[in-house]
Amino acid sequence: MKRTAIIVAGGTGTRMESRLPKQFLRIRQEIILMKTMRTFHEFDKSMDLLIGLPAGEMSTWERLCKDENFQIPHRLTEGGETRFHTIKNALQYISSPSVVAVHDGVRPLVDQQTIQRAFEKAEASGNAIPVTDIHESIRMVTTSENKAVPRKYYKLVQTPQVFHSDIILKAYQQEYDPDFTDDASVVEKSGVSIHTVKGNPENIKITTKKDLAVAETLLQFMEK
Amino acid sequence: MKRTAIIVAGGTGTRMESRLPKQFLRIRQEIILMKTMRTFHEFDKSMDLLIGLPAGEMSTWERLCKDENFQIPHRLTEGGETRFHTIKNALQYISSPSVVAVHDGVRPLVDQQTIQRAFEKAEASGNAIPVTDIHESIRMVTTSENKAVPRKYYKLVQTPQVFHSDIILKAYQQEYDPDFTDDASVVEKSGVSIHTVKGNPENIKITTKKDLAVAETLLQFMEK
Image (cartoon, rainbow over all chains, first blue to last red; front, side):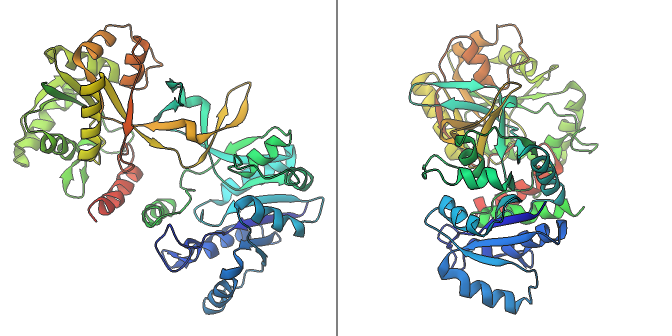
């Protein structure tokens, strides 16, 4: 079945204290968003890539592609007010039936095994998201409760989150809810049970300069 | 009130694939356990330090102290079969009333502000543990359930975990339970409510060579 990856690159650089949005900074020598796209492209060269970028960043991106002689085919789609709106906009370009991955542009350290596990499980079962174990003790802390909870029952959620097109298209017809933190929570609210697969622990989201430095360190270990 | 820190350094080096236990490896140029002890000592020079070490590592430690001319006063206590048993053994040397911190020897990046917040809250309220926010989406995954949970209600738990001596001495008279993942869970099981304070995000536990490389990266940011 046709595969598409929507890569969300909505950042405008404020948290990174940089004039360039975080997805345009470099990890080692490569622009973060290009590295992310390259990993998906190398996993499956026939996959369509939709890149959700703020309208104001498109000309910068086009200049960067030219400067770097970046050849991976892709289509730009306009970023919205929130991640939900960015994805909803990109979903216009999805043909059905197909399989759709949504991935954060600032997770360049996703490995091909994670992408493969997520696609294969989604192709078999309708959806899949990568998760990792939590190594610290965790507690539930609310206004009324503060108690240890068993960490073995909790998982950290990554991307790519992969869905059959009919499932994700239906889910994104719901009203926006600020409690949506990822695509799985949107799909889950539409009544679909979510499947998990193993992520790779290096697949962190780069949102600060410290994250970027940590990611460069992790990259050394991935190459060993 | 008298303050004591029990610093648990029970590792024997298997996970680190090193002949030296992880607490004896170096972060930058300093032996991890020495850096951890130095941070507590510099926070309060009158604090007693009890170091829980496997019996088989004590001679190595003494040689390292001599080689490094390490002068911070401390007492060694013998490590037990599990972390619980190591701490229970160290608690024999606690005088009451006092305030007792338990800290992982392989968390050398705890900062003095975290130590201060934990001691001050425990001195005022009986106990305190440092926690940090979770930045990823999280899910509860059990054999019967797999659902998004609101990450704002969950915290990652660090050390030092600080308690009035009477509270921790009583708690460690309970039978050992494999579900104990930290001291707060032991104390909580004895019927005491736990207070949280803000930890510092760099305060990670170093259990692999990758963790050590990440910690060295984080250390650069702490020094900025």
